[in-house]
Image (cartoon, rainbow, N blue to C red; front, side):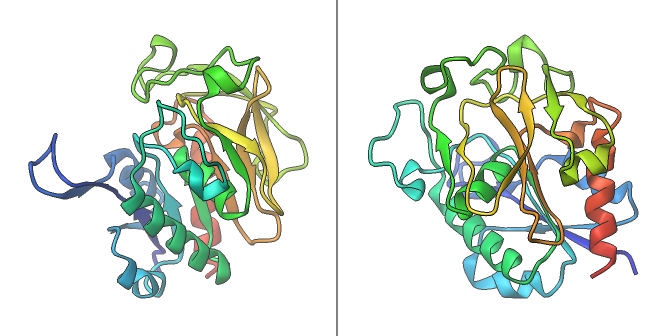
Length: 243
């Protein structure tokens, strides 16, 4: 049986692609799944269908997007002026993610998906890294051009924490990544273990060891800018095949 991997989609009320509401997801996510002989299934942000989708899939990818998680969801009253939310998508993904964790479905969180795992587990975020993390030196608020580079180029290095699931997956201590973000994990949530740091000490990855497979990375491994990015998807698919 080929495992079916659910992939969350972006949502907009209109503009850009269409003046009417639309959903979309980067093709690279789909290709990364298909290349491993698994079937990608797009999950639109409709709360009433969550249980139906979870009954169809053997793994879940919470994708990234050009928006921020509402700081109110991790207990902050003041919102930095750079924050732009997409609450329709965020609330759907939170419900989906919580339900997926309840049934121990294999989960991979990418970029904002990694941040959402942390928030669901009770953790917090930096709302705007350049102002709130004084040691920041390798991060960029642009989602398209990290440090002047394209998404399909390495932007900086991360250190993989020995003994973590991610370290077991990739088998190396350092990777080149393409992350570009102005929010990041501040305080890890309950049961969350940090598995990767940027060179300036900012958290770039996490996991939940109590679950069979729940890994999050701040970068976009679907672009495979590092040879070991593919192993992250391979491990997700391997876990999904055991469902």
